[in-house]
Image 1 (cartoon, rainbow, N blue to C red):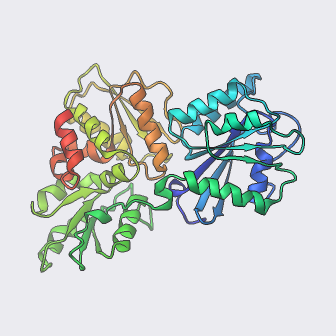
Image 2 (image 1 turned 90 degrees about the horizontal axis):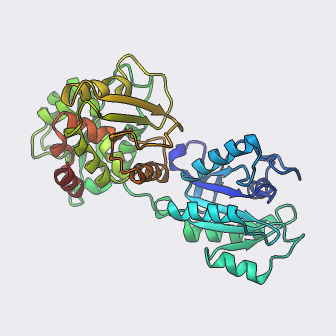
Image 3 (image 1 turned 30 degrees about the horizontal axis):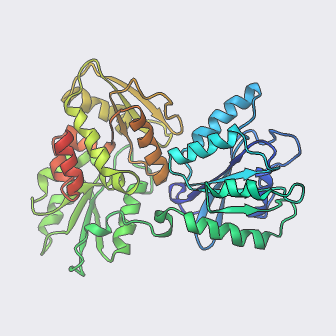
Length: 414
């Protein structure tokens, strides 16, 4: 559990009005005093996260959120923050009590429906007020999964059995059967498939290790019974000459994509780690469409470069230095560039002509799709680093070749 990247964990948000027992429910699930509880409404102020291994689903992250009906001056900020985070969860556990259904429950359900987030209702504190049949029927018109309990008195094993049954029934498929990152690109008839990864080691490379997309790609190749060779760009050409037969796939860091395309024979499929992640974490077809906008950008346009993680930029940082430089060289030097990182994804995207997002290796799939959905709401095209860099270097036709639908989308909408 501790070694699983945050982005691969199922994210379960516990939400509802203040004082419905959300924190007590989290404590029941984890069997720990994870969240502070009291009878005072609004006890939970900031979002509390807790990792745990939830068999048979695997490692998950629970998010205990502030009450959505906290109307105090500070509470309004907490509610805004809560609603923003709820767009990034995979399953919503909405906690109810006292046969109360209000505008706040309506807002939570509408939010979940908008982002296609499955819902489990937990009717809490049934030891104090029994839910009416009419109330339960109303819940079941929204979700088939309605659990009654008392988080402070309920027998944990009985509750967990019912709770896990509901989670398994609505759990997004990728968490029960994770899609391959590149396994489907490996010829199944070749039992000795070879994948070559070109990994430049520069100032941006973390000391003593590879970056997450590279590690994911290597692991997925091995999981699919392929052999993997990792080379730096300065030894790649020589390495190809030593092979008796060509590799089945070449994958590179986007920063050397023009070099890879230039030196790789045309009959060998090639792409980039970031392009692999555009499919693994998001919607590669939509991201390919967005890259076509790079051809039309002019001096009056504004581009948002969004990164999922927060790090100290280096002197030649890919998002803060290189991509803006390539945009100035290949599009227009007067294009306005704005950056955001971590959780600071802007609420208002309307002013941007294009969003160029990182590969999203620290996001889960729903978070990346949610960010794409936000862009679509504002009718703003979005692409990712790998596809954008390939487009800016005029090699995107080659790097999207392994993904025919994405290539067709780029040609049609670009």
